[in-house]
Length: 218
Ligand code: ADE
Image 1 (cartoon, rainbow, N blue to C red):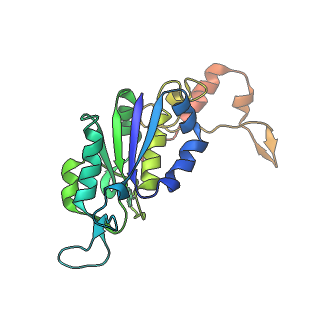
Image 2: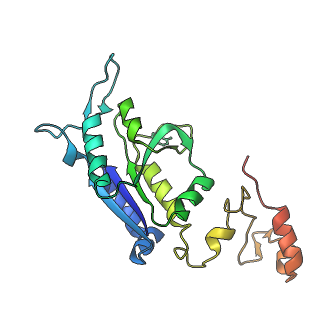
Image 3: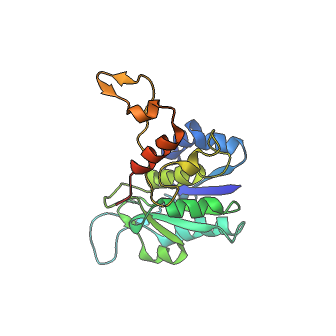
């Protein structure tokens, strides 16, 4: 079973998605487990502070080392093998190859640290295994990337999706092939017709058509 432990200040922003999707089915089937750690529990002083101003000046607040290290070390005390993922716009662009690699390790435990505020103390990188970016834009925190990583990994775990094969044959799964165009009823919608070949019943020709119309990642 693949475990995810999400360290966040905003559990309420993440949990509804996990509870309302295939992710929850995966958890119910015992194929994935989701845990939350509230970073505030590791905050400093009476205000349980988790951030502070940057040395050298500048706007905003940065995640401090102590709460983050203490939170991660408390998880690693139970599982020293757990891998730490940090969502950051300067990370490696998240891609299907990495999702497949994560899903293949069925005993893996991934700790996803969700930064907030203006950023994090650079020394936090010393305990991070994977820096992950969703793309070249800046989000307010790591919650959406955390969900993206979890969703894209969990759907690849055998047994999670209904049609056992669907994750495998679908977009991105085989090299960088994108899915071919698909249609359902009606065959003619407002003059937009389904290609004749798909109505032909000729499976050989249909397979050729699909191969010819599969997209490619740039
Ligand atoms: N945190 C802020 N922006 C991000 C992005 N684009 N990807 C991952 N984490 C982020």
